[in-house]
Image (cartoon, rainbow, N blue to C red; front, side, top):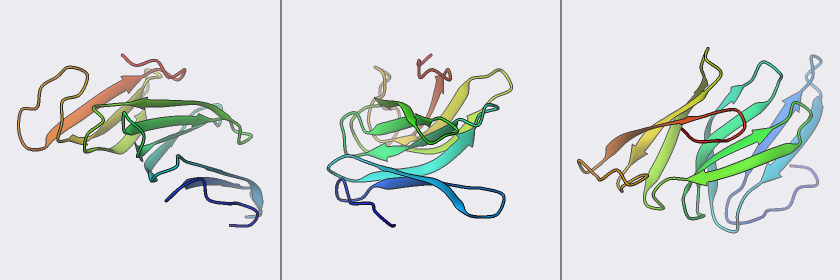
Length: 129
């Protein structure tokens, strides 16, 4: 990517293209370790929500960018163990729903099997329900 330097082992980046397919903006971010975004959702105001994992502890990440490419907030959550967020959707009720799997307890919920499914609910301000 032009003019971007790595923040760690692997970073994520977000690119917005205009209707002519020219780049409007590029944003790159990450921790000193690895960072992977697996899915995104777009809000009615053009906000972008990214969901994935990071080497930070806890290891799951939800990031919100404005339609102009400004990072508005980052939320790290989960067990701090081997977990992944594979999908994110903005529901008709205005909440964000994230789904994935984990090999560790999450939010004081014990592990039931070797790999358990997980579901998280957030509002568009990053508050977890």
